[in-house]
Image 1 (cartoon, rainbow, N blue to C red):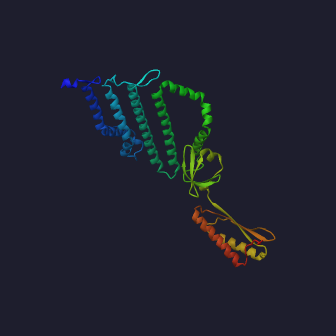
Image 2: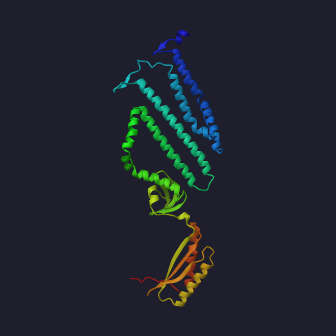
Image 3: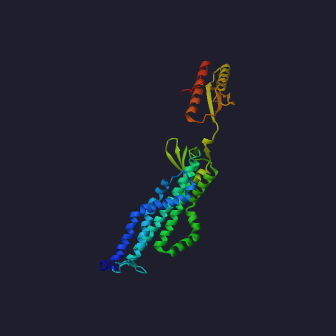
Length: 362
């Protein structure tokens, strides 16, 4: 048996091959149990931050990345028991120093291990975002929910940049990373100029979250667009318009433009003009004005301080002006009030024999 185990294949004994296979197989078989145990241990350290989140949710987030990480660590540790055969160590491509198959495999292992670690960091960010989402869900302010999404994406972007730097370091060496970092100082002005609008939009997003001129769910009017804010992102704000289209507005524009937050209004103002025929008797005009005033005074949804008056007149028409305020902010009840007032105005005109001015046909 020892003779068989000591036999050499590609410069390694059968015993070493079996040890490596056993280590990898053992880790593969128990990787789920190890991953759950590690995730559960980590959960115990941070569970006091958010008791509302169960261990199962946390374990599900980290299970796959930890499994990959454990398998890769097992492969790297097991490979130390083997000597890479010189017969297989062929040159993959020539450069200043020949790049061999052994170097390529080592490079691939480093990349996979690093990317698995980055994946774990991303899942941890998702977990902390989940904690904050649970807490934000307890409040009526939807801005808190969007604030969590904003910073989740922001920190993920930072992790992606770190991952890219690690990848560059593995592929091209620390010298290139140092050159890139040094180059950032030299090219900072050029980079800032090239990314001027993106930086302005990012700053605009921070201004929106700090000053809160509007929140997710608010009805706003900016430039020629009116609709409901559905998302505030790192670069832009997305608005669902009255036509149910989806408009993306850069955050810089949302900050710099004159923005009307319709959701913050306390009342709605109605200004209506009645153009009567020029031959309407003054007594009839006065009666129409008084009846309209009496009708508005009797309406509980119309605020005191309304105004009905003879605004102007000319040779062909007499102009009555009707201005009132209402606390009704919802669309359908507001339209019903306007309809009620308009129909009553027509009824009063008919009652007193007054008619609207008609345009003369050519």
